[in-house]
Image (cartoon, rainbow, N blue to C red; front, side, top):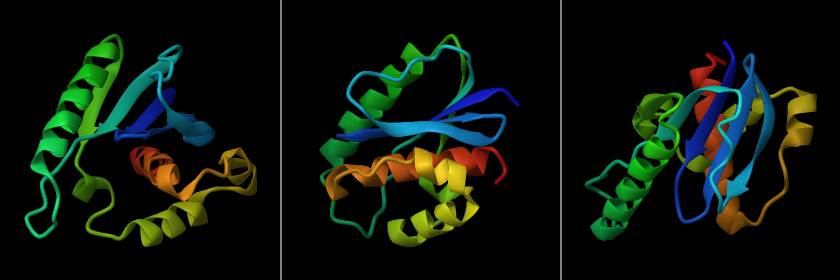
Length: 135
């Protein structure tokens, strides 16, 4: 299957690398993660939810960022995925619990402890990668 880079973009974007379906690295980034040896980049695409109170201008900004990421990784296959495609309408805490249940003890040791304000994007990147790997 090769190397997959999963990205959950945001103010503090999360990333997760998977090699042959196994989590090998993850975290949050300011600088874009390297595409060296990456076969596929999976980026979550912003989605408007009618019921939520959000500033739609923030989603426009996020959409621009996703476009820039797509361009940066143009040397790889790039796939966009909507949140509902990989996790449905599941709340973040339940999604993370399900992701954790699919990670081995070795993989869990890779996952850094991060501040609550930044950790959700990394956890979603892991979930996106697990979904793409069929786990």
